[in-house]
Amino acid sequence: MLATRNAKTRIENRVSSIEYQVSRMPRYHYTAISADGKKAKGEITAESSYAARKQLRVRGIHPTTVTEVGAASESKTALFSIFTKASKNQMIDFTRQMATLLNSGIKLTESLSVLTLQTSDVRFKNVLADIRDRVVTGESFTDTLKDYSDYFDVVYVSMVRVGEVTGSLGANFSAIASFMEKRQKVESKVMTAMIYPMVLILFCIAAIVILTTKVIPKIGEQIIRAGQELPWISRQLMNVGNVLTSWRLVVVIAVALAIIWGLRYFLKTSRGAYLRDKTILSLPLFGPLIKQRVVSRFASTLSTLLGSGLGMAESLRVVSEVTGNSLMKKAIRQARERILAGADISTPLRDSGVISPAIAHMVAVGEKSGELEKMLKNISENLEASTDVVIERLSAALEPLIIIIMAVIIGVIAYATILPILRISAGNF
Image (cartoon, rainbow, N blue to C red; front, side, top):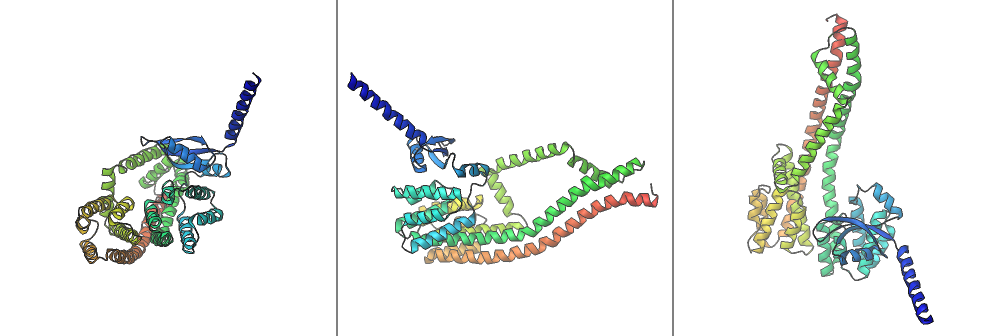
């Protein structure tokens, strides 16, 4: 009897100890994709983020993000949850440093440990720590990167996979860093060219709002009190000011948001995306520029993937996911099907309407000569140089055009403001 009581006590103590240990374990908030493809959110208790991910996989759930609840970074993450993607500069620095460490002969896990300690961004530090822990336990480096698509896109993961399989991970990280730097350089040129026009447009909008809501209404009220009639143009601008300062502005904003939401929903469909991309490419001024960027990105990405050792069919699959244009995506998928059937890739690219016959012919020549990677690189460099010239010309043409439009709009508003004053001064009632 006494032995039974002692055994029961030991079991209860053991259970209490386990419960205490569980209660001391950190809790993790996760977002995941369930077996039926739906998004799922919740919390789970585990020893580490890796253990939390393992528990979720056992349940048949694929985790996308796992963050510790109550950690110092949690409140920051919640506050700035809208900024979930890593900055491009941060990812370029990480990739370049990984290449340097690996090419110096340092092991992958040690390189990850060094960069984990060096990273100042708390969220990215947790990501690297989880990746390192999972690699230490024997999990594939590529598989760990897949779970953090906010940081590592499909091109990144594909090139790392090749490097991991072939043992050239350091060289592939160098290629990835160079590719990211090149892409960011092109995007920065476009953004820089748009800064001045955007500043002018914002200034024009601010001037219109101030004049229509502050200046014209006050002048109009004084003239109406004096028993005079406002000119037609002044009345219309007063009506605009009344809309901007009344509850009707809420209706206008609500209607605009509804239209935007409807357009976004439609553009997410395959037909909507196709019509959008086709319309964009047919624009008179910006269409050729966007087309050059699409083709340049295709050539640069495919050249980089082929150079990293990825096969043609797999490279085309990856490029089709990141091309960003429905017409180009369709052409790339058709080219991949032709490659798998043993045919060439230049014909569907030529028929896409995005790639010009001259570039398609260059692809065909590179394919036949066995120097497709080099040919694609040359195409990308030539298109980038041409794009720079087009951007400079557009920027030079847009700036005076925007200034003229601003001058006309503000001139009309100024005329509507001064006209009633002049009429009163001249006695022309």
